[in-house]
Length: 239
Image: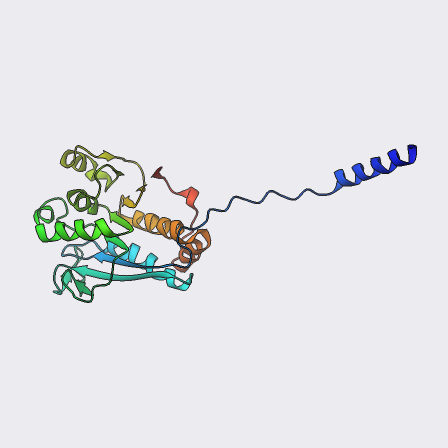
């Protein structure tokens, strides 16, 4: 009996001395790992370079880091050359009426010079955004592109943000909305709205992270010399 007790004691001591395996970190499964998406960028006269190019670069680079990836293209009301606010001359890939316009999974609305005034009176523009955004899986605005989305009814019942110095005008124009300030971006269901400018990279990498996971987001970030860490970003996700 004493021998049995000694053996049991030895087993307990040996077991206690064994290094304990570290608890595996919780892995968040990407919502669309390996899936492809079509991302349409609304490119109208007066569009700002930063809000157009930042998400375009981020999304295009996904093709190098996943079996799926995001196919990017620009859309304008017509096929006429677009002049950005900073003076670049750009030719859209498609017009609103192009018969070969691909199905749009992600609608991106970069800020443009007249998003807070005359663009909101352009019925063809707003109706197209309403129709396409209503069918898309995700809709993203950068800076004052939020005004266009709100006018199109795509922010109704959701929380959002816009360019910091235009927050008050956004609230006055759309008093029924819940508007956040002091954050880089807001994610509410299928809607993502960003403060814009250099912060346009934040929300774009975040959507890549949301769709494809942390490693793909980090890979895309490395390709553009951006250190991606979700915890570094100040944002709101509405659950």
